Length: 480
Image (tube, one colour):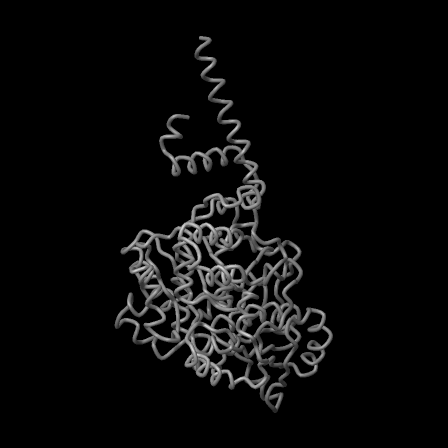
């Protein structure tokens, strides 16, 4: 009996001590990086993601949307840029309509940007779903009624608001014009609303971005078809958003090792923007403002622990230097796939439309096990925010400021040293739930107001703890 009691006390004491340690880790998400330092992490999935979930429900005091007759007028929005830049504009347009107590007309997409895509809103997004999902927040209509347009007798009044404008600006400067004109169009509408807003308005941003803006059925189905094909080849895969187009590189003002030919070609492209300042490439790299090259992306992933047999889905446009630029990445990861490779001839109906192609890439990247970008552009930010909201799926953001110097010194150290230093550089940039303080960074990338933490529950905790330990070491759980 004494021997049995001794075994029981030993068992309960061991489990209790482990429970205490593990509960401290759950209670303090930042503990992992502050305390563990360079300790190994699961590169495929965050151990803390299970404790967080997206929450964007409207609060009890958030009044229902006013009907068309009671609104202050019709608000038209002309978005700007590529698909994901326009997505931020559409999201903010709904919030602005709410602030102004206006009826929102389905936003107009940009047909004149660099991408030259004549797709309309209904070609990319599910309009009926968009209108119905937002019905309790903002009244949305497909067009201004003809009767109202006839009464106006002239085109809608247009104006452009400053970037990152506060709600007060819209109430003081825009609302009087809307009340007087009844129909108002805001042009070049991208990032025209402040980053920090009231929590209920931030939650509305999330309802728009992560729920109301649903792609059309053909785009959703085609994107999911590519995901299924990737998963048939591999149980899990990494999606890489690779922005390495000539115009993007020219705009960055950085140097990528292509000699005088590269310097001349990018300088010629840079002349398109008369207002761009002269930049010193080495200084831009030191500041972390240069996108990683495909080779650098591959080196970072291998150094973090992704093996040679990992499957990559690469979402990109025209890559400067073509196959020669991509070859080092393909050598590091031979299982290299793009939408063109996975889809083949089935992609032809989408080829004339850059925004629809970008939407397909968005679907696949959002569904991937790991997402990494070589840049900090709009698609990288929007996807990072979506993946955080949808369960903190592993999202790697390159620490370009520290990695730049490390890549330059690569030949001065052995692989193990390089790998260790890369892991150290990326500590805090791996998509863990509490890497960034709430309220810091771009809201579209860090939607902190819309992410909640599950309350501590002992029974749930025991189950999660057992699942974690059994997947890590089944024999350990059996012995306990």
